[in-house]
Amino acid sequence: MRRVVITGLGTVNALGLDVKECWPKFLAGENGITPITKFDASGHTAQIEGAVKWDQSEYFSGSDARKLDPFTMFALVATQEALSDAGLGDVRELPEEARERFGAVLGTGIGGITGILDQEGIFQDRGPRRVSPHFVPRIMANAVSGQVAIAHGLLGTVFTTSSACASSGHAIGVAFQSIRYGESDVVITGGAESSTTPLALAGFCSAKAVSTRNESPELASRPFDKERDGFVMGEGCGILILEEYEHAKARGATIYAEMKGYGSTDDAFHITAPQEDGGGPSRAMTLALKQGGVDVDAVDYINAHGTSTPYNDAIETRAIRKTFGAHADALMVSSTKSMIGHCLGASSAVELVATALSVHHGAVHPTRNYQTPDPDCDLDYVPGEAREVVVRNALSNSLGFGGHNVSLLIGQAD
Image 1 (cartoon, helix red, strand yellow):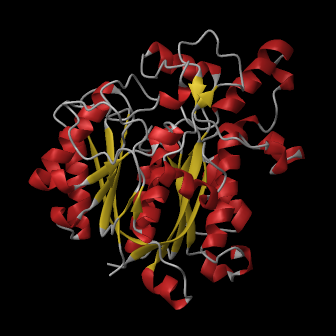
Image 2 (cartoon, rainbow, N blue to C red):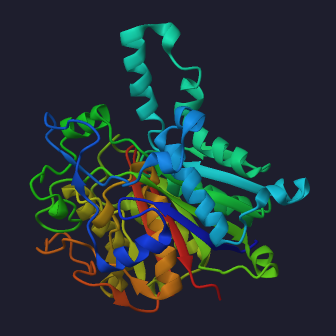
């Protein structure tokens, strides 16, 4: 089997518009949760979000602004950063034969819901003839991978995965396999999401899944804390450049981490609720470790799904204990969502960017707002401050509606 390494990183999220800005804020445990200002949320029970704070017109204008949904915009910006970081900023200049082995596998849970709502309003107010000809190619889930391929001349495997909050985890896993089994040499992977709209938020509010700490948004996302009351909707993108090891080595690329394993399972239990015994996530973690040939006691850190919902956090804790046994007490476990909210289909990707930086820099970010211990959540959630520590191997977990469980194993390249 061919080895796969991570050679480039890019992100857009509630804490910043690139890795350089976000990483120090992750380590500091800063807050990205703020009141919703993009629409009137006064009638919703939840009125806060982890919003990307940018001026869209500085990146996209004219026809691009009309043709692209925000989730695709996020991906195009983060992809350019990741390719530049990897020293691959000019892929289009490579020979066609080389570009046939460059791919893009990206995930999104909901896709272009912003464009759907915009054009539905136009349809209702002005009739069918005024609906934009760009409507369908703007809102389709595969727009994100297709636009990235067009922008950079990628001629290899290109498609989109969609499995709710596990979407970009599945994308990264499939991209890993594409290189591992010889189909590709380089794959742009990760995911993007921008779904904090009045309709989507109303759906999550009705399901009582989101935090209603509207008066204290900075305290709302509190994974594993006893006082947690739901997740906070977030948006953004995470992009990773996966590359075959010898290919990366030959061109002198920086290697952040080696991708070693991928586990994917399903609970086959309930469309929104996880199975209480934690068996599904545990099997995903076990599969990732087995594929990577890594023993449980060689894992130092888990970037948890850690949504800040009562059931999910307790069940993920149970799954970690089921997988790691006595070693669970030696693990560091933290949640990126405590700072930026839940980026839904993009969450796996943003969190693997953070995990790769932990392996590379030897530092683990804290879980923000972890203040009151919960007997059902009894692991080391890295409260308070970041830790400078060698991270030999790390898992990043994602669990999605539909019972989907993904665990990604990365570590230091031996």
